[in-house]
Image 1 (tube, rainbow, N blue to C red):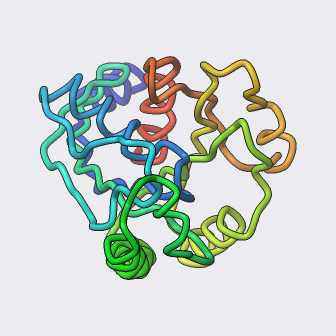
Image 2 (image 1 turned 180 degrees about the vertical axis):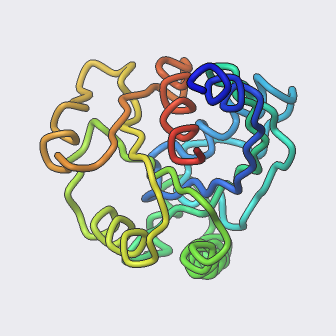
Length: 203
């Protein structure tokens, strides 16, 4: 019986729509780009260093992965960065004109609303957290609270561990009862472990 159960688990195929959420600059698009580039040879968006570069929902479907013999078919959704306040003058610091900055601020505000609405459409969430910054802030607390309220499984990706000032252990300490996987979306370090954690949520 145990052998049959093991064979059944190995043979099953799991499907899920995975939303990638987080505050501005946490590395969401970099993470999604790494996954889609390595599996489909495409990238979902450009990473420029300008805040709110992603201002619309972007989805890539039919990403096929295999974890411990189990086939995963996922759609991954890159959402705009979430912020509690958007100041158009921040964009002007990156060389945008005042008109361009105001336009981008309006688009970014709409993007935040779109990102929050996406909670209704995902099976599993990845919360990308910048491990070089204090993780306990209004955005991360709101994300975790909303996902828990909706009973949506999630994994916290403690990103940017390739940097010397990264402190992923602090994220684990602040969120001790939550699944936290230290990663580098830039180099790909531990992204396989992140996928394994997602597979557990899918199973």
